[in-house]
Image 1 (cartoon, helix red, strand yellow):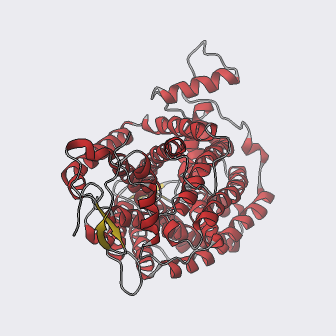
Image 2 (cartoon, rainbow, N blue to C red):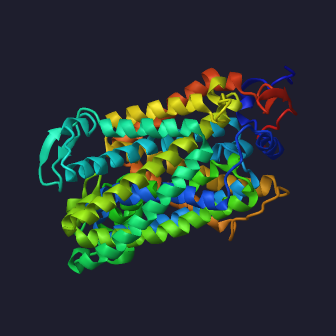
Image 3 (cartoon, rainbow, N blue to C red):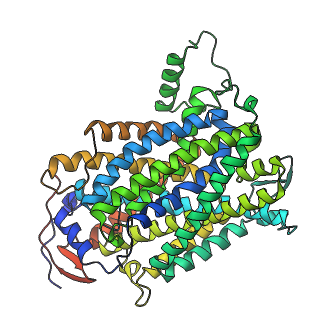
Length: 534
């Protein structure tokens, strides 16, 4: 094995992969290139439509935003548009399997790339577990409609109260969420078989899911009680201190200040709308997951922007319409459960429609898990090929051409989280990882525009640099809103600290970039010594 003398000391942590190196890794990769523009749009829709509407909308409306959850979706949709435009530029210029991890490697260096990998583990690994918990809620509700009863202690994480259907009373305390574990295991097996087969299943499921969502909007709109939308923004609980200005401008400014300073615990009011936007941010992760498929796209320069932006636009419209119908059917305080749309269709009183919607929700959430676990395995695959993770995580199955070892490991970790952690804890931690990762992506676009102006960019982020700057600022505001919770903040900071320790114990010594090696077609070959971060 030919190597070049590595840079000494801590200089390694600032070493960057050149754009040429990243593109060469893509050209010599082992993964099968079988995804076109339509596959990528459906891949994004398969991830976006699902968790936000089918799971987290209820929590965000009941605990934070009230009927103004519709406004929260608008806020998050605008933010995601800024971030999606940044992703579209990077995905068209750097069509690689590692997504934001690879983009960061090219701009801010190896340590920053490692931190991005840690953030993406929260974003994808825990996100799949969030979806599995929601899937479990709809599955249990559907089984009850079919007069099949699962012991309540086996349908929730330890210590989580299990409510009767409709949320009227608590019937038990959870011990383990068995349905959530089972569905993660099934999706993991499907991903081991191969991405082409997985994409085919995903396309079918997306068609079912979108049809059900449109049906819910159409049928449910006939049962909307406009009184449930009033007031659109419920009064803040507890109320603001006496003498606090109450005009809209002051309320927005105060809410943003509370978020930035970590004092936001808003239940309703303008602060609640902003916090609700942070909670449902999870729902938009699908557009980013499209970028992880760069190495398996037939024409990434053209297809990646179409996949990312097309999926985001379609889903934002459906999200706003669905949330409006949902809070119009059910009073928002009654929506705080893992299956809020099941609550709504049960209240409508059409048994056949309830069963159809629940089957659609179950199918939809399954496709979300498929995309999230897919994205996480491809990130681990890329990090392993770079030497930052053990090499056996990049072993590709001879027949299926998938990274089967790391797929099984990711699935096992997701199973444990889904079975043993609450929905609130999982969603908050996943959102924190996502928002931090998206902030770095926006910064990466700015950096590469100045450091690599010659880079061929088939798609360019419009209104540069305003778009990436606004995207980064909005991500930080929502991130601070979530970090106001002590449990979330402490877990996140501890997780990052431990992850950085692992880098200095293992990653920095095994990095192929630091040792002057590079992977082409699975075999190490000599490469030019990468340049340090300037």
